[in-house]
Length: 341
Image 1 (cartoon, helix red, strand yellow):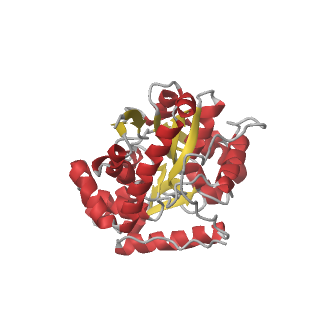
Image 2 (image 1 turned 90 degrees about the vertical axis):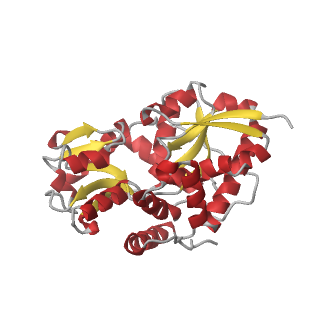
């Protein structure tokens, strides 16, 4: 059997929610599809779409808002599937910081963000709450928001419910403080978006590579679909195998991040049209997409039956918030039963 090569760049160093990708490698699913996949990690997450768009790497992971912005900046990339669906994202802070559930309590505070779009989001929100972008201090932290909050160099920072909130809860426990002292102002609620999909984590590909290697990409997606099915069916065992491949994953906090990510894994890997419509409109509202911008995604490389879309996405989000609270309190692996037609 001939072997087709693919290079794949993750959105940051190996993270618990990358498990399906790494397990597709370790369990031989890529090999069975006739693929040899090189898994790469970036030095700077902000470079990922540019590196893939330039053709230096074939495929990778990136959030939806960044994937849209990449096309707007003439980096030819397209989303071909979803890894994580709608992880809760927002401004994370600790009780006692002077920040409350009122967005206006951010006035005079130092707010950390990963890349430029985080700052654009906060700047845009200020005008809805009688503030300006000058009313807070923006601090670019990259992927070090947790560390910056702990060290006190920022008062709050943009992060994920299933990653940074878990890390901070773990640190709070080490300080004999309640884990619930970590709080989040969800951006989707502040901005009245109706979804958390702007931070859905996607499989993306260079457009030239995609056009020339459709069957290769289809095989890649078949392999990660098999790995995703394994993760969903046997999560505890899957995480043990991931740790065996990536020993750095073998910590209690990484296990907790994996548990909190479990509910967000996309079962069928599809790009959800409703989500893309919402985030494309949000990008236009933020001024990072032109009025005539067309979203860059496709499901044509997913060679299986796709699940029906939810008939109650807002209700699902409320139920997801409750489910994630249960996981935070009790641990374990839980998923939402999505309302569908």
